[in-house]
Picture 1 (cartoon, rainbow, N blue to C red):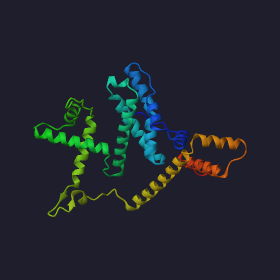
Picture 2: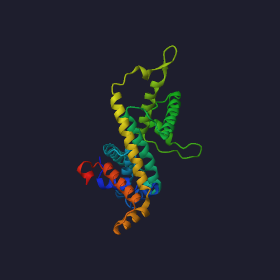
Picture 3: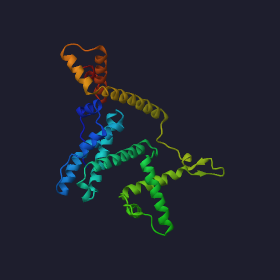
Length: 277
């Protein structure tokens, strides 16, 4: 598995000036045409910035969470690129768009698993409904509803429209989620209790959950300040530098500049003497 390469400089650059989605597509499309092996390697390198940026956006300023998500994202990228059909390797921006959507859904699902809950994205919910409908139909026809069989049904053309490719592993994951969600079914004579309420969650610590909520709230506030600092734009930053060269910086611009620098150091994990410097 390829490991995500991280650095304080990249964190500072992304926090100060997050790229637009169009720039992400352009970075993801930066690979050359050629033999499949070379194109796949070039595609992997081109999509690497997308992994870093999505992981950073979902980490809310936490460096540890960012590194974990980036590693999961690179593992997903290796599998995702390896499953691309030959005819798709030559396509550029459309591949970047597809990967960006798939990666965000995958990492959000991973975060939901780590939180110990079942938080399903809208895209995953639609996919689960499709899987459940095909599963019921196959069982009704007396066929085995295996992940491979369900994936084949999803890929089959319908009403003159081309079906979409489905990974049996993702179908298997959807089936597992459907099984877990059955814990929400009511039980008992009155039906006021669910199966899930009868199962104790030994992993839940109220004190730890409260502390984590406080930390996440602080991280969100910090990210909001970083985004506000980034909205100053290139013109304002150039103006600050020009004023500095002249030895004069307006008080408001100086305060905004200092706050942005302090938050960048915090986001990069620098503290103590480094922050004081």
